[in-house]
Length: 317
Image (cartoon, rainbow, N blue to C red; front, side, top):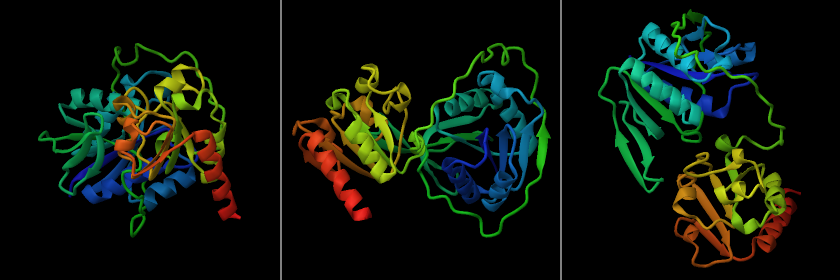
Protein backbone atom coordinates (compact mmCIF):
# COMPACT_ATOMS: atom_id res chain seq x y z
CA UNK A 1 0.00 0.00 0.00
CA UNK A 2 1.31 3.45 -0.93
CA UNK A 3 2.37 5.74 1.87
CA UNK A 4 0.94 9.26 1.83
CA UNK A 5 2.37 12.17 3.81
CA UNK A 6 0.04 15.06 4.72
CA UNK A 7 1.61 18.36 5.78
CA UNK A 8 -0.32 20.27 8.46
CA UNK A 9 1.36 23.52 9.42
CA UNK A 10 0.83 24.76 13.01
CA UNK A 11 -2.44 22.88 13.76
CA UNK A 12 -3.31 25.02 16.79
CA UNK A 13 -6.07 23.93 19.16
CA UNK A 14 -8.20 22.24 16.49
CA UNK A 15 -7.65 20.94 12.97
CA UNK A 16 -8.89 23.08 10.09
CA UNK A 17 -11.49 21.62 7.76
CA UNK A 18 -8.94 21.69 4.92
CA UNK A 19 -6.60 19.47 6.98
CA UNK A 20 -9.38 16.92 7.52
CA UNK A 21 -10.03 17.00 3.77
CA UNK A 22 -6.37 16.20 3.06
CA UNK A 23 -6.52 13.24 5.45
CA UNK A 24 -9.73 12.00 3.80
CA UNK A 25 -8.03 12.09 0.38
CA UNK A 26 -4.88 10.48 1.79
CA UNK A 27 -6.86 7.45 3.03
CA UNK A 28 -8.21 6.89 -0.48
CA UNK A 29 -4.64 6.80 -1.81
CA UNK A 30 -2.94 4.60 0.78
CA UNK A 31 -1.62 4.73 4.33
CA UNK A 32 -1.68 8.31 5.72
CA UNK A 33 1.01 9.86 7.89
CA UNK A 34 1.15 13.47 9.05
CA UNK A 35 4.10 15.86 9.14
CA UNK A 36 3.31 18.86 11.31
CA UNK A 37 4.99 21.99 12.58
CA UNK A 38 4.46 23.32 16.10
CA UNK A 39 2.88 21.66 19.12
CA UNK A 40 0.00 19.19 19.10
CA UNK A 41 -2.84 19.41 21.60
CA UNK A 42 -4.29 16.13 22.89
CA UNK A 43 -7.53 16.80 21.03
CA UNK A 44 -5.66 17.31 17.77
CA UNK A 45 -3.77 14.04 18.18
CA UNK A 46 -7.09 12.27 18.78
CA UNK A 47 -8.60 13.88 15.67
CA UNK A 48 -5.61 12.84 13.56
CA UNK A 49 -6.09 9.26 14.70
CA UNK A 50 -9.83 9.48 14.05
CA UNK A 51 -9.14 10.51 10.46
CA UNK A 52 -6.72 7.67 9.85
CA UNK A 53 -3.20 9.02 10.49
CA UNK A 54 -0.87 6.05 11.05
CA UNK A 55 2.18 8.05 12.12
CA UNK A 56 3.16 11.59 13.06
CA UNK A 57 6.40 13.37 12.18
CA UNK A 58 7.65 16.47 13.93
CA UNK A 59 10.74 18.61 13.22
CA UNK A 60 13.65 18.47 15.63
CA UNK A 61 13.96 22.26 15.33
CA UNK A 62 11.38 24.25 17.27
CA UNK A 63 11.78 27.55 15.41
CA UNK A 64 10.64 26.81 11.83
CA UNK A 65 8.06 29.60 12.08
CA UNK A 66 10.86 32.10 12.70
CA UNK A 67 11.94 31.74 9.06
CA UNK A 68 10.38 31.81 5.62
CA UNK A 69 9.46 28.56 3.88
CA UNK A 70 12.98 27.23 3.21
CA UNK A 71 13.42 25.27 6.48
CA UNK A 72 9.87 23.87 6.21
CA UNK A 73 10.63 22.50 2.74
CA UNK A 74 13.86 20.94 4.03
CA UNK A 75 12.00 19.36 6.95
CA UNK A 76 9.29 17.95 4.69
CA UNK A 77 11.84 16.54 2.25
CA UNK A 78 13.49 14.75 5.20
CA UNK A 79 10.08 13.52 6.43
CA UNK A 80 9.29 12.10 2.98
CA UNK A 81 12.56 10.16 2.92
CA UNK A 82 12.07 8.94 6.49
CA UNK A 83 8.47 7.84 5.96
CA UNK A 84 8.97 6.37 2.49
CA UNK A 85 5.97 8.33 1.21
CA UNK A 86 5.32 8.33 -2.54
CA UNK A 87 2.62 11.04 -2.38
CA UNK A 88 2.68 14.31 -0.42
CA UNK A 89 -0.48 16.37 0.10
CA UNK A 90 -0.24 20.08 0.95
CA UNK A 91 -2.91 22.76 1.27
CA UNK A 92 -3.21 24.87 -1.89
CA UNK A 93 -2.31 28.18 -0.22
CA UNK A 94 0.33 30.65 -1.39
CA UNK A 95 2.80 29.31 1.17
CA UNK A 96 1.74 25.71 0.54
CA UNK A 97 2.52 26.03 -3.16
CA UNK A 98 5.93 27.54 -2.44
CA UNK A 99 6.75 24.76 0.03
CA UNK A 100 5.63 22.19 -2.58
CA UNK A 101 7.81 23.75 -5.28
CA UNK A 102 10.91 23.81 -3.07
CA UNK A 103 10.25 20.27 -1.90
CA UNK A 104 9.84 19.15 -5.52
CA UNK A 105 13.28 20.49 -6.35
CA UNK A 106 14.89 18.82 -3.32
CA UNK A 107 13.29 15.43 -4.05
CA UNK A 108 13.19 15.56 -7.84
CA UNK A 109 9.43 15.13 -7.46
CA UNK A 110 6.60 16.03 -9.80
CA UNK A 111 4.48 18.88 -8.39
CA UNK A 112 0.81 19.40 -9.30
CA UNK A 113 -0.96 22.49 -7.95
CA UNK A 114 -4.61 23.66 -7.84
CA UNK A 115 -5.88 20.09 -7.43
CA UNK A 116 -9.61 19.67 -6.82
CA UNK A 117 -9.84 15.86 -6.85
CA UNK A 118 -7.51 12.85 -6.73
CA UNK A 119 -8.27 9.37 -8.09
CA UNK A 120 -7.19 6.29 -6.10
CA UNK A 121 -4.35 5.72 -8.61
CA UNK A 122 -2.92 9.20 -7.90
CA UNK A 123 -4.32 10.93 -11.00
CA UNK A 124 -5.02 14.56 -10.09
CA UNK A 125 -7.81 16.71 -11.48
CA UNK A 126 -7.00 20.42 -11.51
CA UNK A 127 -8.35 23.72 -12.79
CA UNK A 128 -6.19 25.65 -15.25
CA UNK A 129 -6.24 28.86 -17.31
CA UNK A 130 -8.05 30.86 -14.66
CA UNK A 131 -10.50 28.02 -14.06
CA UNK A 132 -11.64 27.89 -17.68
CA UNK A 133 -10.65 24.24 -18.10
CA UNK A 134 -10.31 21.08 -16.04
CA UNK A 135 -7.34 18.83 -16.74
CA UNK A 136 -6.00 15.54 -15.42
CA UNK A 137 -2.35 14.99 -14.59
CA UNK A 138 -0.21 12.33 -12.96
CA UNK A 139 3.38 12.62 -11.80
CA UNK A 140 5.68 9.94 -13.22
CA UNK A 141 8.38 10.52 -10.59
CA UNK A 142 8.85 8.25 -7.53
CA UNK A 143 7.39 11.01 -5.33
CA UNK A 144 4.41 13.20 -6.29
CA UNK A 145 3.59 16.45 -4.47
CA UNK A 146 -0.02 17.68 -4.76
CA UNK A 147 -1.45 20.95 -3.44
CA UNK A 148 -5.21 20.54 -2.91
CA UNK A 149 -7.78 23.33 -2.87
CA UNK A 150 -10.00 23.57 0.23
CA UNK A 151 -13.62 22.38 -0.08
CA UNK A 152 -12.63 19.77 -2.67
CA UNK A 153 -14.04 16.80 -0.69
CA UNK A 154 -16.28 16.22 2.31
CA UNK A 155 -14.18 15.29 5.37
CA UNK A 156 -14.95 11.76 6.59
CA UNK A 157 -13.41 10.02 9.61
CA UNK A 158 -11.85 6.60 9.24
CA UNK A 159 -13.93 3.55 10.07
CA UNK A 160 -11.50 2.66 12.85
CA UNK A 161 -9.37 5.37 14.43
CA UNK A 162 -5.73 4.88 15.38
CA UNK A 163 -3.51 6.35 18.08
CA UNK A 164 -0.46 7.70 16.21
CA UNK A 165 2.74 8.28 18.13
CA UNK A 166 4.89 11.28 17.09
CA UNK A 167 8.32 10.57 15.65
CA UNK A 168 11.13 13.11 15.31
CA UNK A 169 12.58 13.90 11.90
CA UNK A 170 15.76 15.95 11.93
CA UNK A 171 15.68 19.03 9.71
CA UNK A 172 18.81 19.24 7.55
CA UNK A 173 20.93 22.25 8.45
CA UNK A 174 21.12 24.44 5.33
CA UNK A 175 22.46 27.98 5.61
CA UNK A 176 20.52 29.24 2.63
CA UNK A 177 17.18 27.94 3.90
CA UNK A 178 17.56 29.88 7.16
CA UNK A 179 18.98 33.05 5.62
CA UNK A 180 15.65 34.96 5.66
CA UNK A 181 14.16 35.41 9.13
CA UNK A 182 10.73 36.69 10.17
CA UNK A 183 11.27 39.81 12.26
CA UNK A 184 7.72 40.66 13.40
CA UNK A 185 4.12 39.47 13.31
CA UNK A 186 0.81 41.17 14.03
CA UNK A 187 -2.34 39.23 14.83
CA UNK A 188 -5.34 39.82 12.61
CA UNK A 189 -8.40 40.92 14.62
CA UNK A 190 -11.01 38.16 14.83
CA UNK A 191 -14.17 38.88 12.81
CA UNK A 192 -16.20 35.93 14.07
CA UNK A 193 -16.70 34.82 10.45
CA UNK A 194 -15.26 31.68 8.82
CA UNK A 195 -11.78 31.77 7.28
CA UNK A 196 -12.20 32.86 3.66
CA UNK A 197 -10.36 30.05 1.87
CA UNK A 198 -12.25 27.38 3.88
CA UNK A 199 -15.74 28.89 4.04
CA UNK A 200 -18.71 26.93 2.72
CA UNK A 201 -20.43 30.20 1.80
CA UNK A 202 -18.73 33.37 0.55
CA UNK A 203 -20.28 36.80 -0.03
CA UNK A 204 -17.99 38.93 -2.18
CA UNK A 205 -18.16 42.58 -3.22
CA UNK A 206 -16.46 44.61 -5.92
CA UNK A 207 -16.38 48.09 -7.36
CA UNK A 208 -20.17 48.23 -7.26
CA UNK A 209 -20.28 48.40 -3.45
CA UNK A 210 -18.78 51.89 -3.69
CA UNK A 211 -17.01 51.52 -0.36
CA UNK A 212 -20.04 50.27 1.59
CA UNK A 213 -19.69 46.61 2.58
CA UNK A 214 -22.49 46.93 5.17
CA UNK A 215 -25.20 45.06 3.21
CA UNK A 216 -22.70 42.29 2.35
CA UNK A 217 -21.64 41.93 5.98
CA UNK A 218 -25.26 41.73 7.13
CA UNK A 219 -25.99 39.01 4.55
CA UNK A 220 -22.79 37.13 5.43
CA UNK A 221 -23.65 37.16 9.14
CA UNK A 222 -27.15 35.87 8.40
CA UNK A 223 -25.71 33.01 6.34
CA UNK A 224 -22.66 32.28 8.49
CA UNK A 225 -20.51 33.21 5.50
CA UNK A 226 -17.08 34.72 4.92
CA UNK A 227 -16.55 38.10 3.26
CA UNK A 228 -14.47 38.36 0.07
CA UNK A 229 -13.71 41.09 -2.43
CA UNK A 230 -12.36 41.82 -5.88
CA UNK A 231 -9.00 43.49 -6.38
CA UNK A 232 -10.73 46.78 -7.27
CA UNK A 233 -12.33 46.87 -3.82
CA UNK A 234 -9.14 46.01 -1.93
CA UNK A 235 -7.01 48.43 -3.96
CA UNK A 236 -9.52 51.18 -3.15
CA UNK A 237 -8.94 50.52 0.55
CA UNK A 238 -12.54 49.56 1.24
CA UNK A 239 -11.47 46.21 2.72
CA UNK A 240 -8.18 44.50 3.59
CA UNK A 241 -6.10 42.76 0.92
CA UNK A 242 -6.48 39.48 2.82
CA UNK A 243 -10.08 39.41 1.53
CA UNK A 244 -9.04 39.55 -2.13
CA UNK A 245 -10.24 36.69 -4.33
CA UNK A 246 -8.78 36.14 -7.78
CA UNK A 247 -5.70 35.40 -9.82
CA UNK A 248 -3.53 37.58 -7.57
CA UNK A 249 -5.52 36.85 -4.41
CA UNK A 250 -7.03 33.84 -2.70
CA UNK A 251 -8.73 30.92 -4.40
CA UNK A 252 -12.02 29.77 -2.90
CA UNK A 253 -14.21 26.76 -3.70
CA UNK A 254 -17.32 27.25 -1.55
CA UNK A 255 -20.64 25.49 -1.91
CA UNK A 256 -22.27 28.91 -2.43
CA UNK A 257 -20.61 32.05 -3.79
CA UNK A 258 -22.59 35.30 -3.85
CA UNK A 259 -21.05 37.97 -6.08
CA UNK A 260 -22.31 41.52 -5.54
CA UNK A 261 -21.20 44.46 -7.66
CA UNK A 262 -18.39 42.48 -9.33
CA UNK A 263 -18.05 42.56 -13.11
CA UNK A 264 -16.57 39.06 -13.32
CA UNK A 265 -13.34 39.81 -15.19
CA UNK A 266 -11.10 36.81 -15.89
CA UNK A 267 -8.73 37.69 -13.02
CA UNK A 268 -11.58 37.47 -10.49
CA UNK A 269 -13.11 34.36 -12.02
CA UNK A 270 -9.79 32.57 -11.56
CA UNK A 271 -10.30 32.63 -7.80
CA UNK A 272 -13.92 31.47 -7.54
CA UNK A 273 -14.99 29.64 -10.68
CA UNK A 274 -14.90 26.24 -8.99
CA UNK A 275 -17.66 27.26 -6.55
CA UNK A 276 -20.53 24.77 -6.67
CA UNK A 277 -23.28 27.42 -6.95
CA UNK A 278 -22.67 31.02 -8.05
CA UNK A 279 -25.24 33.77 -7.50
CA UNK A 280 -24.50 37.13 -9.13
CA UNK A 281 -26.07 40.51 -8.36
CA UNK A 282 -25.18 43.34 -10.76
CA UNK A 283 -26.95 46.35 -12.26
CA UNK A 284 -25.34 45.70 -15.67
CA UNK A 285 -27.18 42.92 -17.50
CA UNK A 286 -24.19 42.56 -19.86
CA UNK A 287 -21.70 41.96 -17.04
CA UNK A 288 -19.40 38.96 -17.74
CA UNK A 289 -20.20 37.52 -14.30
CA UNK A 290 -23.59 36.35 -15.59
CA UNK A 291 -21.83 34.03 -18.05
CA UNK A 292 -20.66 31.81 -15.19
CA UNK A 293 -23.45 32.43 -12.68
CA UNK A 294 -25.96 29.69 -11.90
CA UNK A 295 -28.44 32.36 -10.79
CA UNK A 296 -28.30 36.01 -11.81
CA UNK A 297 -30.13 39.05 -10.48
CA UNK A 298 -30.02 42.26 -12.50
CA UNK A 299 -30.55 44.89 -9.86
CA UNK A 300 -29.08 47.26 -7.30
CA UNK A 301 -27.20 45.30 -4.63
CA UNK A 302 -28.23 47.88 -2.02
CA UNK A 303 -31.86 46.87 -2.64
CA UNK A 304 -31.42 43.16 -3.37
CA UNK A 305 -29.11 42.13 -0.51
CA UNK A 306 -31.10 43.71 2.36
CA UNK A 307 -34.23 41.96 1.08
CA UNK A 308 -32.37 38.64 0.96
CA UNK A 309 -31.00 39.18 4.49
CA UNK A 310 -34.45 40.05 5.83
CA UNK A 311 -35.99 36.93 4.30
CA UNK A 312 -33.19 34.68 5.60
CA UNK A 313 -33.54 36.03 9.13
CA UNK A 314 -37.31 35.64 8.94
CA UNK A 315 -36.96 31.97 7.93
CA UNK A 316 -34.42 31.37 10.67
CA UNK A 317 -36.99 32.63 13.12
